Length: 339
Picture: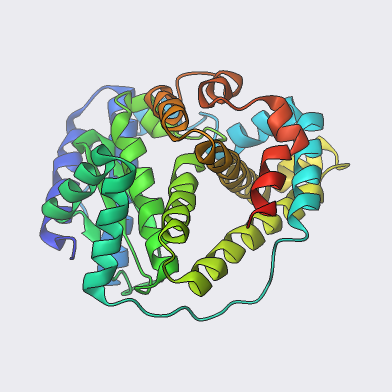
């Protein structure tokens, strides 16, 4: 399955028309954002730059160029509740210490047909709506399985002005590959539910990586339940926990640092912050899923429905996660004891 270069060019030209003709600040900003994403897709697929004829509107750009960056938004959220966050990071780090491993074992290849069958069977088993959306993406040619022209990449690009999500993959057909594709499908599905352009453009909530990470956990949960690829499932599980501990290692380094030092390291902190909370919350909800599948799925669906529209506290409430759940780490500890 490959993404059509012709369609990417067509999308760029449609949005160029908007940029070159609109007088609306937000419309211009959204179109520019989507064009840049499409240019990245083109570069990843071909290894070349796509030359465009764009009439930049410096007046409109000046009206939003001072908007707060995504990284600054993450840092503000972190600093607003720094003591709480630091305790959560430290507790998670101590829990994960005994469960993360640095070894990386080559997983067994899965035949292409069996890989697709496992993927589709899992999606049907978990949620028919997500399966239907995956089939839609596949039928439209919005998934590229071998994005190797320019760099190794696994990502979902939200071209929200055209209501399109393009998934670019570069992974093997193995258990880790299954986790990767459901992670990206999770992003695409969540993005498709958002109809507010401003939310799509800013999409910088601290819990942005939650649902995609939860889909990874559900894939591993499904494979474990069906006693499939046990060794490779354990390997992927260990990789997940090792990566999560790496994020906590990065974050606790800044526990006693000044705000100035934190802001000067906003790149590494913001990345570690969103992946930590996404993956850690996914473990908490995996525990809940084991003790009540229907309620957990209903909670998550409510979260996805309103994602980006409420405060972090309200979004946690929708998920059914308390601050105590995060501070104590009890659910994660109990989950890992059964690992």
